[in-house]
Length: 66
Image (spheres, helix red, strand yellow):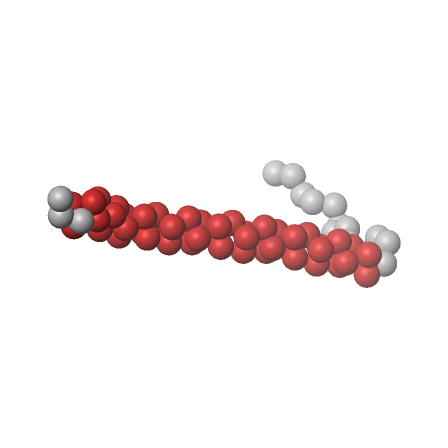
């Protein structure tokens, strides 16, 4: 029997699997970036709240209604 017949399915599936792996890596990288961005953002917010003196975060006057 010809050994090429056993290798044919691997040739077909190999490009599909490479594309699938590339998509998974891209999704993982995107999720990691989003997680890091959220952590960094909340860390900056927390630091900003600690740096501001008490009472400076409030508006200068009460908001007006209608």
